[in-house]
Length: 266
Image (spheres, rainbow, N blue to C red):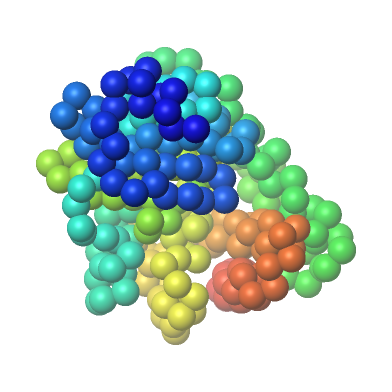
């Protein structure tokens, strides 16, 4: 799958291939620069290049080339990691860094928005899951519906913000990779911060409140609105895991949803 693009873009392999459920990746050199060749195997991943191209290297890795199901992007060679920061005493600093990167992604661009999935459509799995299972998923659905009835101006979203999708690019700063092709309310992109880096960390007493204050200051969003997005997102994530019969991760997302709902009730 890599061969046509290695030839097309005159690339030299520069590491071992990486296989994920949705993509194949190969570290390469392009014109002497470190780059990553990504060949998508799912439609959702194929459309992610639309967002990357629209950001044009502001807040995200720069796109060097794109064609069909392949994307050639700037590659980080740093060993610094937001996940490692968060797990070794710098959790709040990691969240502040992520907020700055997301703000750069959401900044206006003077160009037409690409053909992306509306956020409300992105939530399609939540309603049937809430009808079937009720409980906290019903609260998640109610939160999502309230947010969609009072939307903030839509932006090109990343759609999958977590510690592993924002990398250190040295002088260029911390930049995002691997977006989903989604467009909608900016609050959505901050919700997954409260579900990462790991369940043991995010469920520590007081962690939600500390990071809620950080995100509220960084974004200007009301804490209740952020919490509503956390509740909605955790429910949606649980609904996706239900579709995949992933019982372990379902329980984690349900727990985060309950924590967010309890904080809202206060």
